[in-house]
Image (cartoon, rainbow, N blue to C red; front, side):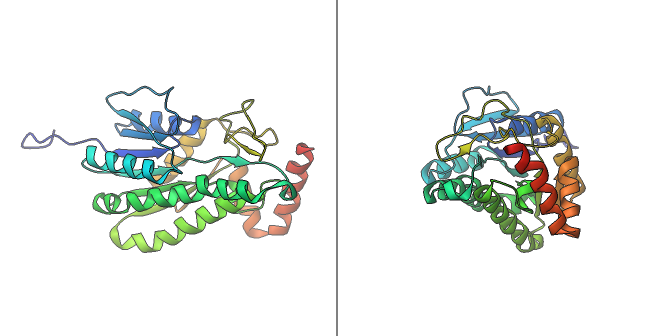
Length: 263
């Protein structure tokens, strides 16, 4: 309560891909700090509603479902303070085996769904002077073996949100990007489809995996500091600096550590 008896509402965060390992870790960390969290995901069967957590079924690649879900979130919450664009899949395999259909599908999930969601929450975040937080990857600022489509989608995501940052600054809105290294959310549950698309965090060729809880903690700490780019994890930090200082050296190190383990 504030003086005069008026209740202060909890800040509200919306998380796409909220039913996944990293999405749940974000939710748990934010709720522990007094936030209300709304999770959007295609399958929310394993997520229970609570006074401070709401789960909404939404296929983010379906425009009608996206429109309905975002309209519901905005209608049911007086303000939105944070949107975390966390939904995504990976795609593993050589470019020579990658179909155009798989490439486009990956972009629909990893890139276009986030951009559509950002458009829906543009005004609410301006009203609250809130934050867009895009979850990218080391592959968003550097090359990654057997991830041509995945890297391309994450490069596009970073390009969009880093450019949006300049537009939204005058509205008092922060736009931040997090680039975690390998997060172990689905190890052993790859369920890789014929087109190479698989669950995020299911790759077996990763290096120095982080738990979802560790990644969420680092990312949210960076968000509070207002860091424009948040490399999360030892590998991400090293990759960020090495790639900036010497892209050739980074490529050589990446190929030695990733391509050889991929077999």
